[in-house]
Image 1 (cartoon, one colour):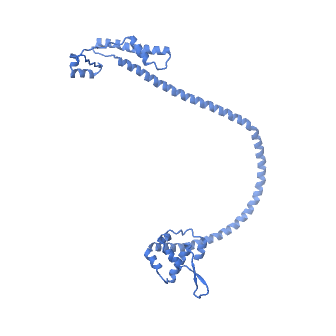
Image 2 (cartoon, rainbow, N blue to C red; image 1 turned 90 degrees about the vertical axis):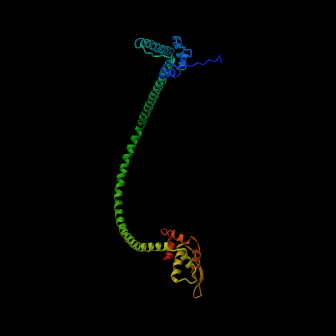
Image 3 (tube, rainbow, N blue to C red; image 1 turned 30 degrees about the vertical axis):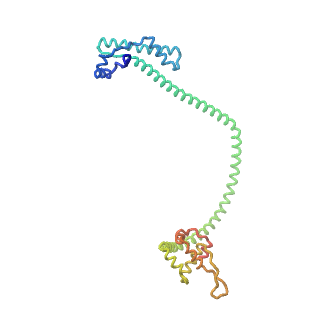
Length: 303
């Protein structure tokens, strides 16, 4: 314990040092204070040379920078002594200040070098683009020179083509007269087609309300209604006709049954209709039926 020594290193700059001394007076009363003297010029040069060792500089420039940094440190130290003598106030010049000068110089040097490098890179790219553009212009000029004979030939071909066009224009005029006559005949047919279209639209206007009424009525049907129809043994003629139409629309094949006279067989849709109504998705299939794309053969059968 008698050989234990504690070393405290503090900077005299700022209020923190004075505050510590006021809080802990034993730092002055019970400690041996050793004020480190200023670094000599050789030490300043050695530290600066070590700090700048990995910076790429010419030897002459490096020596000038080292001398400049030493001059800054020494001149500030000398001015601080004059300041103390005239104003009676201390301005401490510590080794940390010197290291901060070196670090500031190095940071500024790196920033400026990066700035110059970027500017040089932009100039290099610009020069490359200019050279490339010049090469392209020279190439296009050579191509234009090579195309001159071809342009003469193309002009000659164009003149010959104009003669052909004039001849074809005369023939086209004759054709236009024929087309005008055909157009008149086509207009007559178009008028007839428009008349048919009007008749179809009139018929459609009558059919659409009926279709909407049928769709509305279909939406009111329930499974119980389907079950009631399916359970009929002798359905009315209207019911049979309706289910026959549904079978034809859904392309359900009929079955052959004896005719009432007993001599031949006729198509009967009632048994296939009952099988169709037995499907649990029967009503939904009617709702989803593609009424806009009914095959022409089915439409013919319905008529």
